[in-house]
Image (cartoon, rainbow, N blue to C red):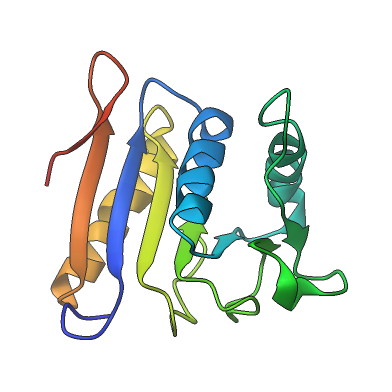
Length: 154
């Protein structure tokens, strides 16, 4: 996970928007890029709201996805998973809680999305940043501007 061989790791600090507003947009951009994605959390219960949101992301369409514990996980463009394995050969990993960052083989960019209005999530993200920086990881920090656009702040 160093700058020489590991993925870029982008921290997304939610302050003005919620996960269910931001994650589908980032996943849609990832798919438009021609990449596959994995959304990882500590439990499938934590992923259930994401699953529901991806089905209803837009009135006229949905984001194609599936769960890692269901058949054909390896064929899913977006995979919801609790495992560290890169089952669908994703280039992008989206971490939505304090889950470990194991299994980054093949990942080009890792998104760590955290709620800045939650003191515990904010403290965990700061600790994770400090730890990864000490390991030489290629880190970026993104936050929303007043008008809601994402700006690179570090």
